[in-house]
Length: 158
Figure 1 (cartoon, helix red, strand yellow):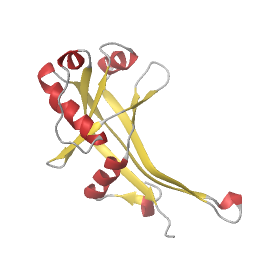
Figure 2 (cartoon, one colour):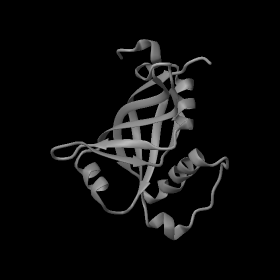
Figure 3 (tube, helix red, strand yellow):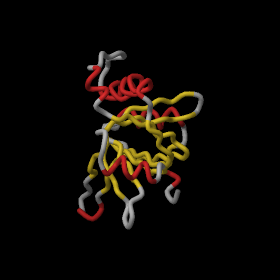
Figure 4 (cartoon, one colour):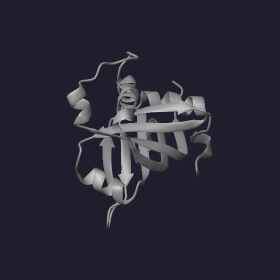
């Protein structure tokens, strides 16, 4: 990382940043250009490993690309704030961001409820949820096992 002064290496801090994010962008391999898609997500951090969880329709380009190559990149960011200076060209932007890579696994029907619970916990203060059985059957749920993760932050003191 070029700007090591902005690097976040403490895993507890990385997880804190992840909890603030509301979108995770997946970068999938497509024929000529990468295919990037913003998604809602949930995650777990256990035994030093991060897993991200997503849901989607039963068919579509995203699933086609995952089935061709389950290796993906991901990015999420938050805490944006413009820092103005007296001269416009001296502006800066506060941020926190996470990037990484990993591989995706489509989950079985039996694994969906737990994964959807992780997803819902990202956006709710609740810890348990009741899911509509037909709704669960109508979606695919997948897990991204994170192999590499990098985080950066720029915060100005006021």
